[in-house]
Image 1 (tube, rainbow, N blue to C red):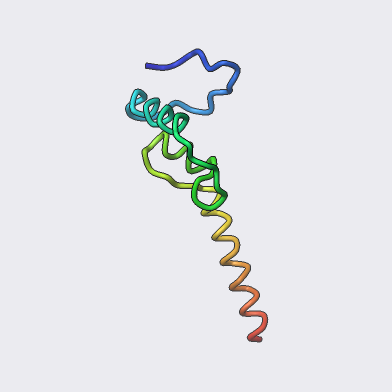
Image 2: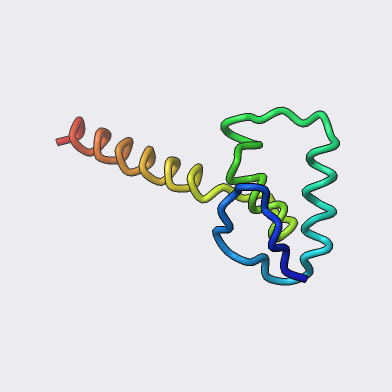
Length: 80
C-alpha cells in the first residue's frame, strides 16, 4: 500500500517492509504524550522508529563522533 495523500508533505522515500505496521507505530506516537528531547527522542529517533521499529538518530551519532574527534585532538595537542 503506497499512500498518495500526503496533505502537503514531501515524500522523502518509501517505507521498506510493512507499511501498515509503520503507520501503526506512527499513530501510537501521535497518540502518546511523548516529549521531544535532543539526546534520546529527537526527530531522527522518531523517523527511525516509524520506519524500522528501532530508535536511532544518525544526526546524534554524527555529532558524538565529531565531539570525540575534537576531544581527542585537544588531548593530543596538550600532550605535545
